[in-house]
Length: 410
Image 1: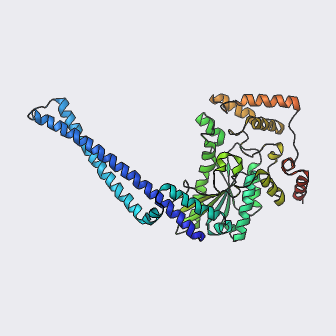
Image 2 (image 1 turned 135 degrees about the horizontal axis):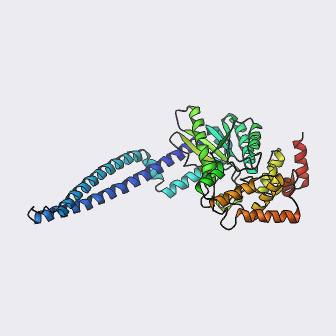
């Protein structure tokens, strides 16, 4: 199937699903309105029969008030029925153009299955996919996975002759290690790609102060509010600048790997972003390094001379927020010791916020306990030290590290 036809089919299935959902909701609203109308009709008949049974002379306030209330409720119910009927007609009109798609994919599960199969085929041909896209955005944290995802995307874009379509977005959470924003900019400048920084006012600490709660695995507002949501306006702006008279195709690249966690293992290489997709843009999320292992990521960094952040040399596995609510205790203790070595005030800033809001950073451990453990280890073992290239030495061996460092100096 041609790339354009596959994308068009995916959009038709999406519209069909949306229309079917709207029609189901309208049918339910219509049934509820009819049930309510029947109930109020019964009440109204009851009070009218009661007054007639008394010869029409019962003007006692309770009975008369009940009749007036029943008449009012009946009128409101009739109005709801008319509104629900109009809504049902509108959704029926929406549904009509998509009947062929609905007949072919007769239920939601089959529609999702068809979309997944089409997306999987598209992911097998990244050059064609980029050629068919109108805009390619790379969401980067400047971490090891992001730079490999950027390198692969650029290679495919150059092969497609479409590097001009690519943009890089970095979401600054206000809680990152020093130099992350500058590194993200250098990584984009290496390929001559336009670079944009987006940031939510107040950042992570401001959000925690306002909510008086830290994020956790169930409420990952640090991801949604500080990373996902701020990219929407940027995509909207870039799509508007394209000035297309049709729906734009946007390819949103992320450095997500399946080996990182069970939840990420369930993600697909290419997925429809239903949150950002609208009538004027079809947004696909491309996890272009989903199948890579951690060692393979470092191998690509070494073989292509990609600049990575020195924080990896300390032994920390990810370049996320300095204190990540999803990190294990050992990781948090090491991050604290690195802060001590770099003379960063972040441990005390975070601990003071924890005391101020009265909510523990993690359910099973406080930042005060993390800091105390870090100080004890520093007292026993001395300050944490590291050398440039230690991350590569751990993953690929000394020879690969020395070769990488030699290449960077030239």
